[in-house]
Structures are given as C-alpha cells and as structure tokens.
Length: 297
Image 1 (spheres, rainbow, N blue to C red):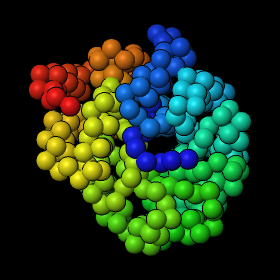
Image 2 (spheres, one colour):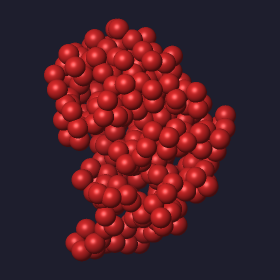
Image 3 (cartoon, rainbow, N blue to C red):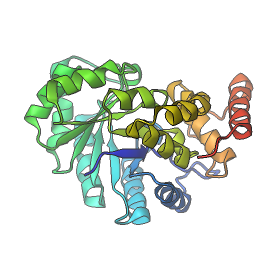
C-alpha cells in the first residue's frame, strides 16, 4: 500500500430516495482517479458512514473496487458503535477487495487510552491489510497522542500510517520525532494541507477533492516539491473552499459544492438536512468567487 498522494474521502452518492446510487458512485471514483488522485477512501465521515448499514458499507467497497480496478487502491473506513461490528466490517472490507483500512475510534463512546487501544488493536489485528489510524479529536473526542501512536506502531506491523486531524501540525513533527519513517503521515484537514506537508506529511485524505480533484493534486504536488510560490498562490485561492471541510456541516457543504460542479447530488441522510439560510448563502458565495477567480493549473 502506497499512502503517498491525494486520497479523496469520497462522499456517498444518494438518489432522491436517499438510497446509495452505485452507478453514480462508480463514475465518481473513476473521475477522481483520472484527475490524478492516488486512491479512494470510502465509508468515512464525509461518506456519511454513521447513517449506512453494515451491508451498505460492504457494498460501497465492492462498487469502488470494481470501478477503479487495479488503477488505484481502495481504503475502507472502519467505524462502528461496537468493537465486534468494527472487526466484522474490517474482515468484510478485506474480502470485498479493499487494499487498506482507515481505522476510527468507536462512534459515540470515547474513553481512556486502555479502552481505545483495545478497540483499534482488535480492528488492526482482524486483517493483514495495511492500516491507517484516524486521529480526529475534534470530531470523535478521542485523541491518540504521539506516544500512544508509537505504542500501537510497535505492537502492530501492519499499522502503516496516521491520518492526523487534530488541527495541530506540530503533531506531524512529534510523531516523526518518535518514529522516524516507520509511519506515513497524512493530513486529514483540508485547510492544513500545505503546512502539514511542510512538516513532513506525505499524503492527504481530502474532502474538497470530490469537487476539485485536479486542483487538490496540484496543490499537494506544489507543496511536496517545495514550490512554495505556486503552493502559496493556489492555496490562497483554494482556502475558502478548503475551510468548508472543517465545520460541523462539512458533509452538506461539500456535497452541495460537488453537485454545483456537476459531480453528484446534494442529498444527505437525516439527521442531516439540506442546506438553507445563511449556510446556503455562504457556500454559494464561496463557490461563485472560486469560479470567478479560478487560476490556471
């Protein structure tokens, strides 16, 4: 598993009845890879995994794998209310053809290190697939500290990488100081990608790539090559869009932008509701300005 590059955390295409639209999903996956993305991450937070059944999550992996074939790896998000179901989902994702797993802490329940270590360890040990630990304390109220990540890396040879979404790019430096090149580090918050790469991250689990994959790949490449002038210029244009990934309604916002760009529908499952009022006016304004000022790549 090569964790380097831009991996869109894909949205889950829903039809008007809020059923998963697998045909649209397949088209979307192929389009992302054709635009330079390195792989696909399905069944994550942006993919509304909390609202998907076990069978829907497994079917999602099957569709993505069939869509991209051998051109790119599919990484399955593994999150559940229970450790038992998370383990079963990891096993099912491997059988469905996933090449890697993105391992999340359990939904709702957040506790101490002993319990969180037991949960993610059970998932990582359930398959031989390379695993990416997802650290997102703002969203899940569980913070995997660098020392704890080092402990997991020592215990589990197939823990390959960390998706760092604490919002503190110093975490990238701290993990590298403890583990060197043992783990690949990926940025998980869109508006921190340039800083994260400069701190040592080698990949990006990206949200706005669902609507702007070529721009996302270009930004990542500029930053990775050390082309700071081009990275700064593109990042300045992109930031208002990238910041849509870091607020509570990020799913609705990104899906709306994606639909407005002709790449899907804005439908979301309750308890999420379609955008309205100030939220809708804001995203319209952000996208209108981005379209008007779009730079040459």
